[in-house]
Image 1: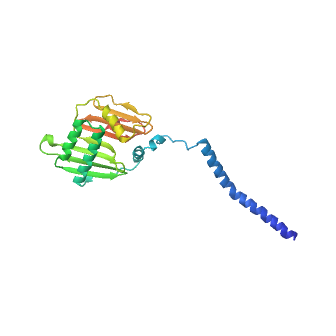
Image 2: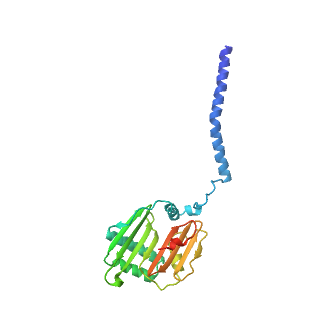
Image 3: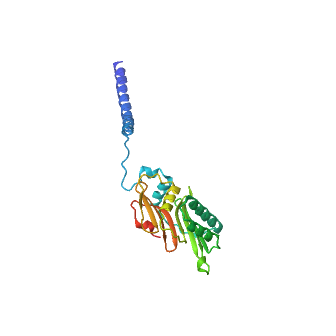
Length: 236
């Protein structure tokens, strides 16, 4: 009887020990999670990572991610009518937002109404782009409209049209473009581009550069993800 009782006590001790071993890791994990929650601890942001404010903007975050994605697709001939209509829609959206000077918008509309020489398009990493090119014997009948936009939202991140404008102060266009993209609430915009026919702005929190300029008979408008502001983003 004493032997059986001894075995029962020993079994109970071993069982308790096993349960304690199994429970300790779970207790530690719960305690660790509580500590992290109470202290508001998060993993330290690594250098070059997009800030929380930037990650909260779907477009800004998409541009940031596409910066590290492979770029391999080429623009290929596409459905002319579809490209024409898509570019007309993008042109009107930018014009209504005030991001395009009137003369530029009129020129873009005119180009998109002409017989096309070549129409190309591509889609890659969540962004689509298209170009509508006309070229006839008359010099005045040459021109193109190109745009790139986020497929999910339709927001234009690049727009280039063969058109000139007498406007030297393009900052109002850039401000309107920033509002159009919905990134005006990023907290740290730095405005630059005081040269004639150029305006740009950069947000460190969003790692986002916006630019608007005219050069060589063309009007350029766009947004790009950059860890630091660089003149490369303004290269055409």
